[in-house]
Length: 431
Image (cartoon, rainbow, N blue to C red):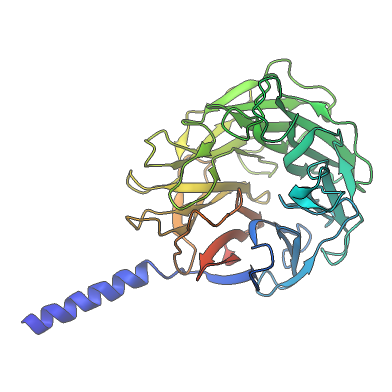
């Protein structure tokens, strides 16, 4: 009898380990740290070619560009270069013609934090051959000695325009009360060789401390009729602005889309720096929710020991927003953080990737995918990482993960820590 109990306990333990260590999806490493002398890979961005989902491009801190021509099963890694410098915050997007764009921070002086030209501009580089080669790059928002940081971008559905938003600091990390941060916007044509003069679009400025009172996390989206939308965070609010003339003019007063409880700067055990900044998307599909707007973020509404992922939506071009829906479906009391939202423009289905600790009582972390087929009302959660990892607060994980979806081809991207080294992964998912 005792032997039988021991066998049953062993089987139960084995099943539990399998449930907490296996994913139904193949995990693929995109980049890993090869030596202690290189900048550890983190803060990744990924984009699928809308014209051929087999082609994918990923950008990884500090200056990596990775390409795949077999749907993400294998990757080729190269170093991105530009006369304007390449210094992190990668954001990869593509238009509906198959052009890729790589946005990153500029460092024309090439000296990093030891020089005085880091953050002098945002840089955009274009590739017309699936990420194999890239243009030299064009500067966005140059306004020395002010600093330009934390950009994102979007292409118009007709592929004729590219829109970018970011934060301008009077002086990055300054605590001088008269120094401020603002959200800037610029646009260019498909070739992206020259950008329009940057314009401020936020109504209320923030501080420069790179904290909750700093305006950050601006993400643009484009609607079916060419509307340009932007959402960002400051203090405990998510603000929203829009333009109906291609970004030439904006609302006089920003719209408050949601409360971000506890602010966007969040304390996650084991993570050096974590944020719950908003991600905005718009449904351009021919589905029932065409034109709908969605904002995803994480916050401490349920307590500082329970960071959750949330979603709000708008059906009237951002004039009003729904009550937030909780995206993660676990019991309360565990952390879900670093969410990123995307939409499949072929179907209107929504996908969110995030780190998740629902299965553990410590800092052990899985990666989860949440999907919704009804406009964000209900969410299906599933673990997509093969095995968990435990981060340490002395290792920088970056400020975000990312995800791209084209016609049911789903490719999340995330950073993990193993044996003291960082690596960047994806999962092969077909919906």
